[in-house]
Picture 1 (spheres, helix red, strand yellow):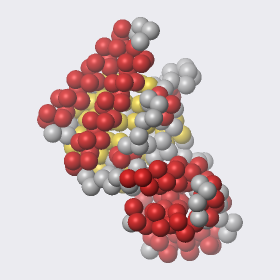
Picture 2 (cartoon, one colour):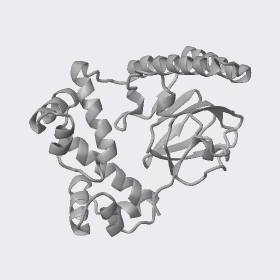
Picture 3 (tube, helix red, strand yellow):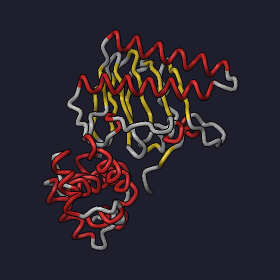
Picture 4 (cartoon, one colour):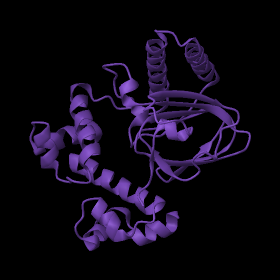
Length: 280
């Protein structure tokens, strides 16, 4: 069975409405709705007000602390184990809910740290913005969706400022668009195409140029990006599903499970079977 992908309405057991935005204040955070590991088809920001425990994102465990944020992009697998008194907010939104022309936000990159400890003044500023969204949801007039979208954009930009102050964030200047386009294509096609030439052709550039841009701006080649994305999904499937090795290999575009096993061990120093034992 593949790792389940969950929509916003399923998180809260709502009728299927293709809901594109949801803000929930948990006191405490409910852990019983979907207790098993799962993936989302939406973006999520989790704000911890008070509490403790752990939040595992793509099989990496992170400590939960007061006034802390966690970020989840669509497709990421996660599971949390929180103390009973943990309270906080969940902000959930689809890509199409973002304002037209919205930029990429560094904290949603798969290679980025998926958490951010907040200073007291940052935490208080964020709470004020969330309270304003709650007010708009209660008003629910003809303009409330537009205002919520605008306030969400303000929140995302504030978080980008604070995140950039806390972590080393690379801005790729004009070539940033090339890498962004490549990563978007990679997310759609990594199970079908592992060759740099495919992505370069889709972007109307040469494979050599795409590799050069990635190496210069991100420190790794396009081929490295492809390899790492396949390995990440392999680790997700090994850790969080009961699929056998042959099924995982086929899911990731390998025709030969033995080749998949050699590929996995070459870049992780463990066999798929060993990795599964260590992470189950």
